[in-house]
Image (tube, rainbow over all chains, first blue to last red; front, top):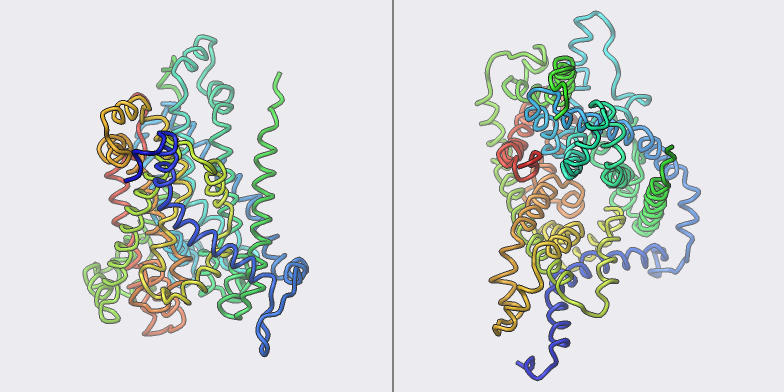
Length: 298
Length: 279
């Protein structure tokens, strides 16, 4: 090989590139290339006769006026505003309680709450769909026995929150484990100092642990927000049970999917997915910016 | 330890039991429902047993549609295993490369990979589908496996891990002994990277096992479906069919069988996803 005649620095750089090359090549093939292709598609229109026509930003302008798309974005934004704080609040309380050492059977609780994360979202949605259902769902069973009308959990007013429940059920445990792991990384001296100051378990949790959890909470928030804006599997599964409520545009991702693969409006769908990407980017940025603001404390 | 470890234990433990019930009851329902015949599914109370027909349901699950459930199980295992091993290997190589070497464009490449997390799945799925269909890759295992091999999170984790665990002096010493870069990675560095490698392996395995969107876009022939897609397919058929063809019992039993392997693995591999303080 020619390596021996080259300088060590040169050899060094070539080795670094060689190690990253297999990954970068695949990244270029299944990430960069499709992304550029989608960008290209979004700027064109397919005509029945005469092939592709350049339309510039026309699809983006259409998307910004498309009520089905905007309605879906509004719906997932509402979902994010309610479900993410509820889920992370629950995960935070559970992590602090389990970390306090004041609960028996902590291991059982930790594993039991985390286990739903092993259930694929599709299966979780199928299962909760049966639980919500009026045919053989236990919720309807209990309501019937109590002599009250069974709640319609798959109706127009309730379905979004029924989906929020599925997401909360599946991912609370995962977030709890992330927070517990972060708590584990806190040095014991910090607790000893708090104990010397006479802080009880609740005060230690609120004034010592909570501020130290900020980075982990931020990570959980950003990932939950990105995930929620891309909501797809749950509404797609619930479509079979509540087709009128879900329709084809309940969430932006579902709408984009239906446009691309049922209506064959690939170019428009590509533009909408970039608009959705922009929304996700802006919201993630805002979340990170807000959390970076120093806490006002005396 | 706090001064009064016992104070407040009972009420807190009771409260946690209520919380645990929320997370456990749906799975308990699935377990109970799997033991019932289709008729009893509708006629008996959901959270208690009827006539015990679990084995009949299991047999029906594995024999319906000429035993297609076996294929779904095999496909899921195939996609998850190959993606997990491949993604972890690629991440180990690239993470080590980013951590140990200086080369032009390193920062830009690394940030491009990290930024890719923000891109919605649909934005990629549509053009990837078009490209793969032109290459004749749709309706093949590769259509699911190739995109699953790219784990930006894995690269990030592996770089941090390699920076923390592989001492540069050790690499330098091996170089002075005349070992080539590849040999150093294979015989010295990789061994130090194994815990990070396992973490990415488990993460990618779970992510691919649970994936729905990518296979939904890429696969249209049921014999290549993974379990998630297959069960959603059976559920849609059962809902549309109604009456005697509404085979909800195999959807429920199939769902139970599909989640058991991961649940068992999570419980057995506890120490790999959580180490209590001081361990």
